[in-house]
Length: 69
Image (cartoon, rainbow, N blue to C red):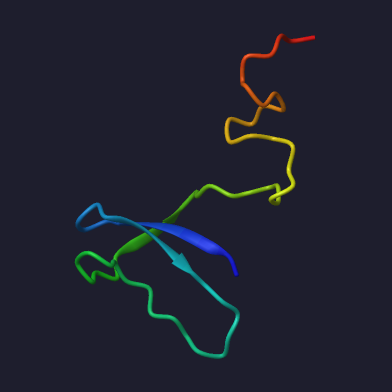
């Protein structure tokens, strides 16, 4: 299920929502102030699984200090 990031236009709160594909409609509202005046923002995503050769900085070098070559 995808995770979407939102920001509340009323209080400035930022939060993520896990949105599934169901027949049930999810009410989108701010978790801090319950406002429905929210906007979807760009969120982070993961391109690799647990066996990915890349570390969190996006480098394929495990120490992050390998020479470019």
